[in-house]
Image (cartoon, rainbow, N blue to C red; front, side):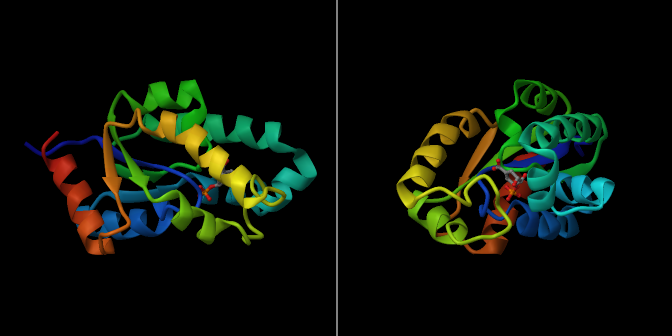
Length: 170
Ligand code: S3P
């Protein structure tokens, strides 16, 4: 039977939630929603500027509001920001009419991808070993997702097919 649930992509910065999400939406015919992009549009500022001008708390409150609103809809692929799933209210909403999928990568892959990024205020001032601790700490929570994909050895289309398969079998 065709599900009308959302597919919610969870995982660290640099795990490909947006790029995989876009491709997955094409493949499944579901609409694509990128929560960070919605926040940037609403505020007319980049995430980095929001952190700088308004602070992290302001960003997290907006993230909660917008994520919860979108999680009440159906038939979307939703890319959550990397910190969103740490919020218990967002996790609870994600457990209702969505399947959650953790895009898991080796810690070293993620560190290489995000350590020099100027677009990721949470890690801007962190050293590699501090990013590693953050990934390990967060992974305990990401691990409560319904499904996990170990992405390192897979092509993008293999990742997408796996997720589509999870979705079709829910
Ligand atoms: C964050 C991840 C970012 C963005 C913000 C905070 C985090 O999203 O929401 O910079 O705390 O991990 P991406 O995971 O899409 O980079």
